[in-house]
Amino acid sequence: MQHIPSKAAVEQLLLEETLVASHEALSTQAFTPEQQTCLVAEAKQSLKQGAAHQRQGNTVAALADFQKALQAFQVLAQPRSTARVVLVMAHLCYTLADYLWAADYARQGLALSQQLTDQALQHQALSCLGNSYRHLGELKNAETCMAHSLRLAQTVCDREAEMRALGNLALIYRVQGKSDQAVALYEQSLEIAEAHQDFVALEQILRNLGNAYHALGNSQKTIEYYDRLLRLSRDRMELPVVNKILRNLHSACYAIGDYTRAVVYLQERLQLVRQLQDDRGEIQTLESLSINYDILGDTAKALQAREERLKAAIRLQDLSLQRQALSSLKMACIAQGDFERVKRYIHYLTESV
Image (tube, rainbow, N blue to C red):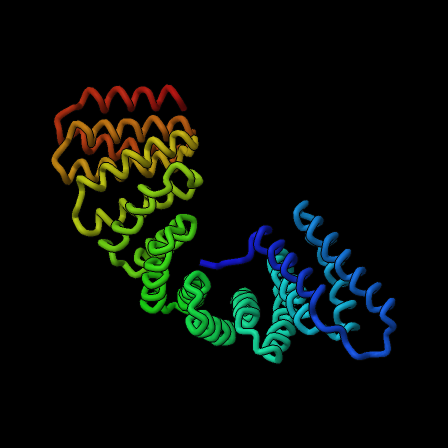
């Protein structure tokens, strides 16, 4: 679960920065009061323009404006203002998937925040730096940054920051193949999301837990978290994501021998793939349904599923799938003594080719 700042969060950071710029002590460099006032005004205007461009989704233009503000704050020797703008730029580069620049700005922000002994800014810098390192494949550095970020969040008792840090560190563990450690952190972040009733975070964490336990082959936990996720936010989720979850739920139920529940998820998935007009997904789902119905001893529904699978294969005009579906249907019909059905579909298939 990776966390990058929303536009609202960036705007809030910039608003705070404008206030800082108004009150931070000016440098003792050889500037006249008029020059200092002019530089601060230019910096504020650049921040305002950058925020406007950010709201419009023009991140490149926003970065150019923030660079002007950054230069002004550096000239004025205002380290706190400099650190805040550098971190905004780091986050924006991250959203552009420019991870090298994101890491560079985050390192600058980290150095400044350490000089200021500002733990909140250090946490932000380490979070962005850790995520950037992860994308760059520098997993050891990513883990070090995220672990430090987590300790800082715990030190300042910022539970929401702790939740984000737990999720980010868990993601790094998953990439490293440390799934057991990842799920332990996801479980901790889940407790915080529940306590804060953060339903957006809760949805992401439940999905991450379902994915992680599915990768571990823990079918009971996979079912528990995926099912809870669907009950919480099925209506808000993208249909392809729901499709994948239902597929994994069927696999988990099948693995533990809960074929009745597997059929429930398969029926739900069948409706979904038809809604998506995913013919291959429909063929796969109908095949799984026929297998589960066979195990449950419901031969009539098993035959119906195989018949629908053949129709879908014919509609798809895939001769290989048609032959597979017809062979499966033929064997099932022979086992039931329903020879007329086989003849009917052999004739239909011949006429369709």
